[in-house]
Image (cartoon, rainbow, N blue to C red; front, side):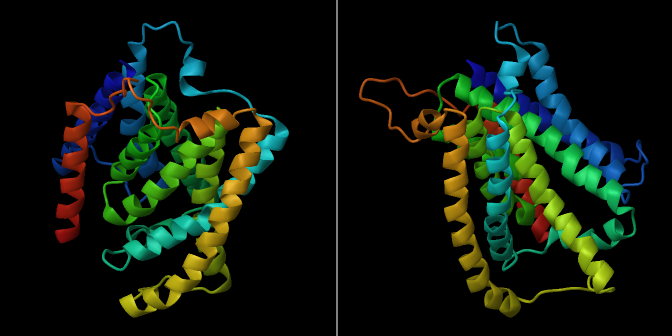
Length: 305
């Protein structure tokens, strides 16, 4: 069963992450993690090697390009993907704002370091390298792996949950879960991993570009920038309104992308109930459950600490 291979791959990611943390704790590895490019390459290495290891043992007749969804798209579909990526941005913003009512803004803590570096390098690291590796793992290997076993919407949710927990902090996990669902949906609508890579890249690029533009026109904006609970609450109705509008347009662009690729039935199939007598495929196994529990505990302890 493919779900077992996928879940073991996620468990291997956890093991590699623990080893990496220990290497830094005991100063076996000494690199400048303030450098966005270096820190991205280090972090993404554990994400990349886990599925790569499991795929290397693939004995199926399925081609690797098909297994990962490395297929092209029509130009009209690509245009819908870009519009879809823009439409989901307010939804992620709302999820981020809601999470900030209880936890700190993790990304904001690294803003000073990022602004001190060349914006092109930061953009390449966050909006090209990270999306490529993470989509390869969580949509190409994980989500598509579950779909090989005919798992339906549960595949969307679990792959998005794994993607969220991979960030290892509550703030990023909150909106990563939401956009993870969105990335899986556009992947299903197009059948191409490049669609989720594009959306992921746009989502990350928007934050980076906005940050540098704001600092350019309003120098010092991020110096000791903080938002209290009352300020966040005052912004929530506006964010919610944008998110609702974004969701409406996202559904429209998702439908059009699926229509252009002749995959409307594929998207609808995610929500079809299992028929009586039809064996419901499994998705959970010990490696997945253990990994999710340990990552969740780490995030909570990290917030407390």
